[in-house]
Image (cartoon, rainbow, N blue to C red; front, side, top):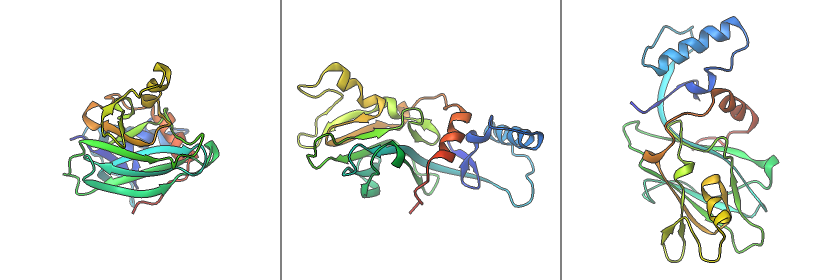
Amino acid sequence: MGLALSVHGRPVIEDVKDVEDLAAFTSALTLQAAQLGCLQPLPRGLSFRAEKAVCFVAFGCTGAEDIDVYLNGLTLPCVTGLRLGCGARERRMYRYVVVPVSCEIRSVVIRLHLRGRPGAGVIIDRSFGVRVVGHDALSSTVFVDAKTFVMTPHKEGMSSEETGSVQAGCWMWDGFYYMLAYRRTSKRHSSTEGSKALRSFPVIPED
């Protein structure tokens, strides 16, 4: 329950609608059935795999931005001191698989380090979101000040437009960005969009 089925490490949902011929269409129907809990025989060499993963697509505005990624508050570090690429052409998909699959993902925290550099910030691809087990949690994002540790989507001196950008994936403040997994979007992204995203961005190898 709540796990993302994958074939060769790719989430099942990504392939459901991205079909170009009869063979691919037949495979897509098999994968779609798997999502509903009906596992049918697969061709030799293929297998179903259930996994829990968190992934997102991001890039830095100046190339000097570092992030730390944690799960369940700050108790489970996925990566620390990760330097992001500069500009949209350097955007990457970052993906972290949690084991065992029985481990519950309650929250995702991304710590953003801006080093006080003018114009620094991080852009999260809004069309892809921050996916927790295949569902988008970006809309639940709140900002947590790194000095006061006060959780709020607002910051003194910022306009309502700027504060609203937090849940849109435009992160321009040094601090923590906190997302609740159980408030994630229940409707999955378009499978066609997901497939294109996976092909367009290099994937950072899992640790």
